[in-house]
Length: 147
Ligand code: FES
Image 1 (tube, rainbow, N blue to C red):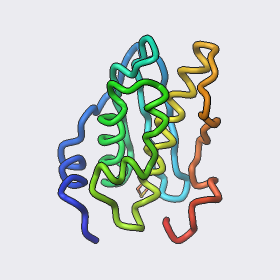
Image 2 (cartoon, rainbow, N blue to C red):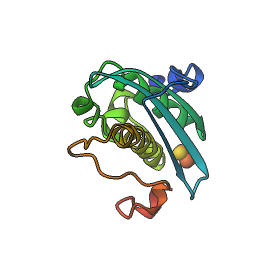
Image 3 (cartoon, rainbow, N blue to C red):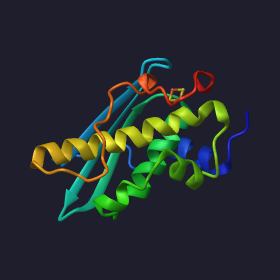
Image 4 (cartoon, rainbow, N blue to C red):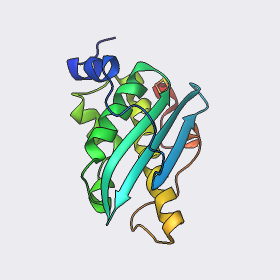
């Protein structure tokens, strides 16, 4: 299996590892099939994501995608943050092997879960944001063979 230099870099030197104590939103998402768990913390003020941190118990690609996802979301408005799909994360990492695509889905879902938590805490609705799942392996749109 070949990983891009960027994936290797974000795996070996992950950015934004840790927790935000007074986080505006926290999202935890797992994948029951591989057993990996990702937790993302966001600090949001005036509709802008000021800081993002993560804790990931998972494979190298899950670490690299959480590192990149937290990098991408920093400084973004909530609306822009919704555009950080698993595809955008993969593109920013110069791609992932097909068998590792689902790891990037974990990153997208964890970002969404943190945004959802933020919205709930503040009694607001984020347009275009669907209620995230706790276990992404329940997503039917992910083909079996990706695991
Ligand atoms: Fe589970 Fe990568 S193998 S997230």
